Image 1 (cartoon, rainbow, N blue to C red):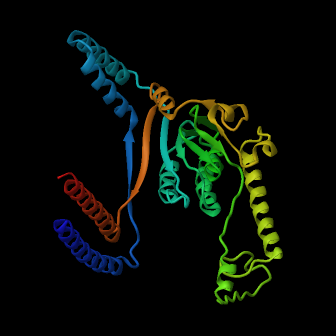
Image 2 (cartoon, rainbow, N blue to C red; image 1 turned 90 degrees about the horizontal axis):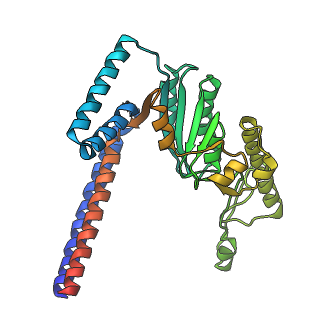
Image 3 (cartoon, rainbow, N blue to C red; image 1 turned 90 degrees about the vertical axis):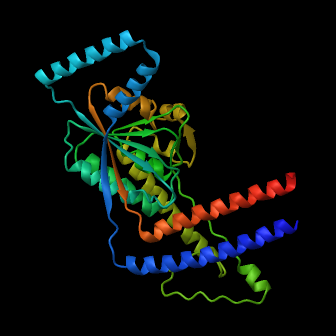
Length: 339
């Protein structure tokens, strides 16, 4: 037991020193980073080559040497034929969007869309692999606008949903000329929700007054600390309804075949049911779609990665160190209990 106490004391001292050092470094990094623009790097990767590498690896592990040589010879001859009689294959540009509540991936998406639009033509195609359960209205409104740029440029847009495209995620998905869904992906949630705790009665019980001063009748409708009124609630609900109406009109604009009032209830559907509701156009995984495309097109994955600031790198390093210390403590505790 004494050993355990000594170890915990040592760990606390080490963590204290680490926290002090990290705070100092973060402060320095923050001061250096002020005013600096966050830069990134565009990466373009051939998925045809990636699929070919997977195929070659399987063949090397499974096939006999004679058959391997035969296939290699056939491919070599095919390459010669392609060089003698070149054909302009269509191009497919693949973008990935993994959405959180703030749609923070929009920063990368806007750069990727700009890059693709600088080269793509109406003979090409953009495929977006989309995963999002939705989030803030204004954030997903901007993300949707990025995909609308592709539609407005006359470039075919296909959206693939393998897991979820709900609420703001479906706002983005509906812009696609076609929407593909995995059988058990979750789609829909065409609705608006807002919630806010109110602790006014608790504060009042403890004789704590809160003054909410506004200029403008509806500058503040519902509050966290002040006393909410029926008038404020009514205005808040009116704003929610206005947002919902805009959401419905947006979806109906890009998918006029929908019974918008029938699907804009806030409900969600799995892929096969979403197909029956015309929320999607086809049941397929993104993997199958892209593998099939790669047979007759040049498929490129386009991604834009922002460089992490010094402050962010220190933050990740600190989190990793803390996780390591906790793991070591847990290990030593287990050893102490068992031995």
